[in-house]
Length: 412
Image 1 (cartoon, rainbow, N blue to C red):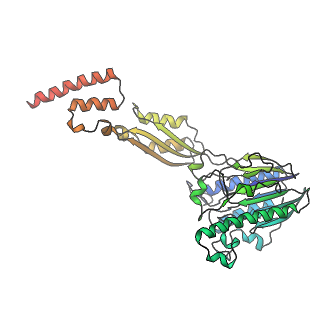
Image 2 (cartoon, rainbow, N blue to C red; image 1 turned 45 degrees about the vertical axis):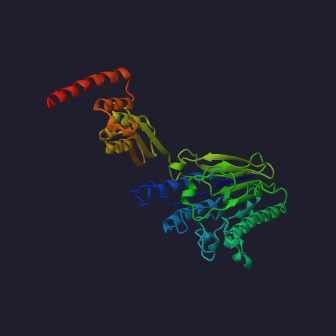
Image 3 (cartoon, rainbow, N blue to C red; image 1 turned 120 degrees about the vertical axis):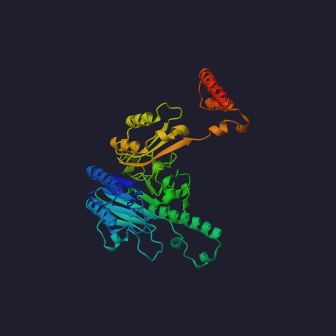
């Protein structure tokens, strides 16, 4: 049995909602991402991992700055001293041209020991301290790599897309056929970076580079594989549907925005064995994102209630956004700066926004032709729009009638 660690979609360099770190000069979110990678690799070393598989998208974009490259490389080098590491190219790692270097190609150029670069559609023979494993790498599919015949360039856009999908399916079939030729007692892994039909997508759509590629689940559900390690979709999920072969997106290690607020983040720990693979999702301590929604409509003291809501919320170390529903008449009673300060006092890492959502529909609720109503009738409809009790409305109208009559007497 081989112990394997599967993670993906690191996206180092994402700086959403970050602040400048006073000691290092780096964005605080860069530190968050690096700490998650340290956490993953520490678990691997503590549990004597045999093989690490990274399923693509190391950086935010194709041209990471030297500091980001250094920090990532330092950790990969340290991990490769312990066991082999497979680095697959995702769409964020690939250069715009096949003749240009990817953001991870330096590992291959320098022949870094125990680091296997998955930059091509190939089956790799990897020796670990507990035996041999065969790992097929499927980097993010691009047409320039799969459509190589001269006639492919003369096709219409639709025909070219159809040919592309066929080429992906054929490539996956060929890799499975190659895996079947290997010794029966050696486990086989497919690691890929793409969207599988039926997968639940999320925030990765917001940072996707170019159009996406769709792969059929049936092309992966093959007994030739003992585990299919996927990247590209940030939401952790298993697509196996009862199949013997686990087909798993590990998901990303850190949240990039509030669209991932409720998604657990982590990696997969795999006990790899031919025909009997077992796996577990291991959550990491990713930075929490917290949304506070407070309904202050009809509140007697909206500012106090907003502060009370903050005091009751768990925002320690979180990136926070706060939405307050207010009546228009209460807008001036909210001190936004105090709310920001209160959130930071409660331990928030970053306050993304404090937004006032003002209820401004009183005029609509007065009726279609409010200009035809008397002041007393308008006031009655206003009180009802505020959902006040009938006895209270009656008392208010009695008092208002006295005021209106007094004004009329003064005018006469």
